[in-house]
Image (cartoon, rainbow, N blue to C red):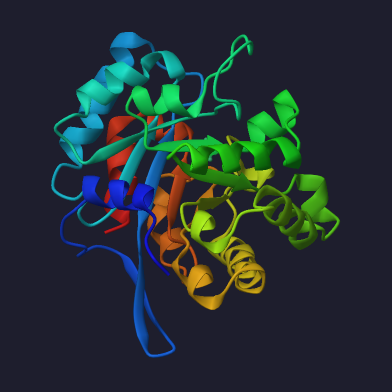
Amino acid sequence: MSVPLLIQTSINKSRGETAGQVKKFRLSGKFLMRKAFVAGNWKMNTDSQGSVSLADGVACGSMDIAGRSVDVAVIPPFVYLQAVVRALNQSHIAVGAQDMYYEEKGAFTGEISTSMLKDAGCIYVLCGHSERRHVIGESDELVNKKVTAAISGGLLPIFCVGEKLEEREASQTNEVVTRQVKRGLAGLDVEKVSAVTIAYEPVWAIGTGRTATPQQAQEVHAMIRKLLGQMYDAQLAEELRILYGGSAKPGNAAELMREQDIDGLLVGGASLNADDFVAIIKAAV
Ligand code: PEP
C-alpha cells in the first residue's frame, strides 16, 4: 500500500526517532508498526491568552519526545487555531480542528471548510465527536460526508465512535460501533481510509470521570480492528491507529496504552492542564 501524500506530510512534521511506545507486529513476513498518538481536545474552553500559554506549556514539557517517540496534537477552538499554530511553530506538535463542514465554500453561515482549516495550519480534524453526534445531532451520514471531505481536502480525520450507556447496558456496544464504523467510512477505499485515525470514545466515559477499564476498551478496539480487516485488508487493519477517549488522565494513561490495540489517547478535560497533558504524553513513551 502506498503512503498517501497527506500522511507523508504529518510524518514529515513528526520526523525523528520512534523510540517510544510503538506497537510492532509481523504480517505475512512484513514488519509493521503503529506509533503512539496523543491528542488533546480543548472543546469550548480557553481564551486567546490561555490557549497560547497552554500550547507553550505542552510544547515545553514534551519537547524531547513530541513528534519523535509519540505523535502529539492539540485541538483548540476555531478562533484560537492560528494563535496556537504560531505558538507551536518551533515544536513537533500538530494542530487539529474540532469540526468542519463538507462543502468547500459558499452560503453555509457559521461553517468552516477544509481549505480554511489547512490555511490556518491544521493537520487533523475531529469528525463525529460524541458531543456533535448527541448534543448537536449529527448523523452517521453527515459524519461520513465530513470524513470523506476531510481526506479529499488533505486533512487527517480523527473519526470518533462510541456507544451510549444504555446501549452498553443492553449489550449493543459492538452493534452500535460496527454501524458507526461502516457508515462513517462508507465509500472510502483502502488508500483513503489509511489517512484516518479512529477514536473509540464510549459516551458514558466522556467527561464523566468514569473511564472504561483497559480490558473493556481493548475488547472494542480489537473488534474494530477485526472489522477493518473484513472491510479492507489485514495490513490496513494492523496499521490504522485506534485511540481511546473517555476520562483519560495521568493516573490511567499508561495502563490503557499498554493494551495491544490501544495506540494512544484522545484526551478532553485533562488536556486543559499542561502538566497533566504532558504526563499523559510521557505515559505513551
Ligand atoms: C473527549 O472530549 O474526546 C474526551 C475524551 O473528553 P474527556 O477526556 O474529558 O472524557
